[in-house]
Every structure is written in structure tokens, then in C-alpha cells.
Length: 126
Image (tube, rainbow, N blue to C red; front, side, top):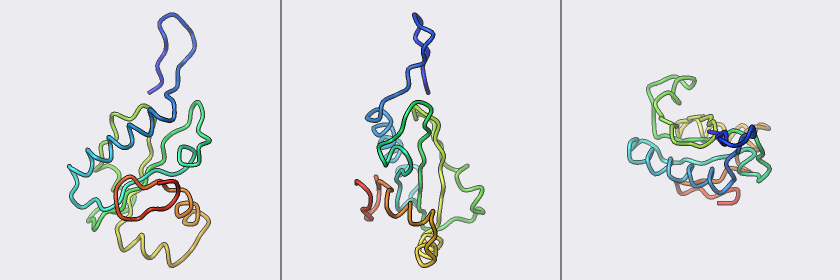
């Protein structure tokens, strides 16, 4: 999270390399804890390279299956350790494939800009 320097009233926001490194470390930790995780990446401002002070990290995960409803799946994933706020969307493989068959503006953005850290799929700047 942002840190207040003891000698200043200015918040120091973590740089892109720090955030991306933390995302990679998080992906490794989550892969070890969740064998159902088949893909993990980030999209949005950090993937596009236009993140700034106050930007959060938008994350996407694809799991083989889940008994939880879509809106509750992210609760199973511990995002602690990220230096900025993170927001995670979790799809099952079936949902991911179905979404790709019904293109939308959001799906197109995911396809174009997601940087995949884990998984075989390579789109964006992976």
C-alpha cells in the first residue's frame, strides 16, 4: 500500500516494476495454494502502462471449476502482499470459453491487454 514518508506529507506510490513483481510473486503463491488455478494475469492500467498514483491492480484468474457463485469466488484468494489495492475476477474454464464466444467490449479489452503470468495463453505484453 502507499507509504507516508516520516519526513514528508507526501505519499509515495509504488512504481510499476514493484507492482508487477508483486503480482508475479502473488501468482506463484496462489498457484501453490490453488491447484485448480489454470491461468492468472493482470489487465487494466498496469497492463497498458498508464497506471499512476492511486491506480489499483486489476487481476483475472481462470480456474478449472468452482462450486462458488461467480460473485463469491475471489473470496477464496488472498491478495495480501500487493503494494497497491487489487481487484480479482475469477472465471471457470467453461465461463471463460463461453465469454470468448460472445464478444463484448469488456471481453475484447481482456483479450487485448491481459498480461498472463501463469498459464499457456499469451496475449497482451506477456
